[in-house]
Length: 210
Ligand SMILES: Cc1cc2nc3c(=O)[nH]c(=O)nc-3n(C[C@H](O)[C@H](O)[C@H](O)COP(=O)(O)O)c2cc1C
Image (cartoon, rainbow, N blue to C red):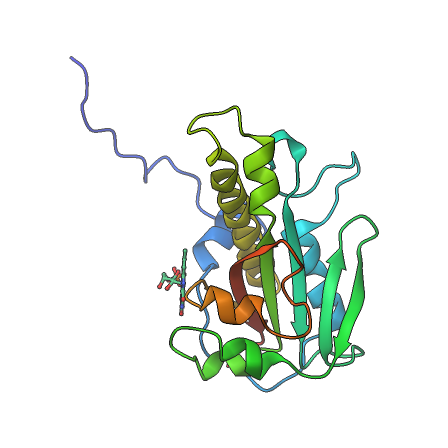
């Protein structure tokens, strides 16, 4: 006789402190941020979790053909020892590169579909962008011809977002993925938050939860 329903909960190992399982239990979207500044070390851990390199030259996220079509921009507003500004994350050297000075959290939050007031309170906004055209060209021989690459870009962005959530959860920080925004408004913001030729994929707010 074959069982058709096999209950897993009784045999599944509980999410003990320090395990991935416990992080998965704790991961939540946070939409209320305290005004407190975020340490630069916390930001460093989160951007590395999003797109950082590993010892073998790969990155923390899987990438179809190891193409790595994503970039990460950091809209820093309330980070210790980091001037408010827009930075791009240089994954090869694990460092931030200043693009422009000034607090741009308001203008970025203003591109969202609902103009979320709470998003403006996040210590930093992380923006993932993707080179969709290059990916489509790279995977042009895979069906559906000419548009397969973009799927891979979006999938890879999902990996990066979950990594950000989990790294934030590990540090007791809040994170939220906001994918509802006006693409054209975000793309056209002055200070090259979205690099030329890239498509904006996600905004994530991070900070101390209130
Ligand atoms: C693709 C995607 C898009 C999302 N876009 C938004 C958004 O625009 N605004 C928002 O407040 N939350 C957004 N979220 C977060 C979801 O609302 C959230 O994950 C959901 O309410 C479940 O809550 P939890 O993340 O705490 O489990 C998005 C999540 C995903 C996966």
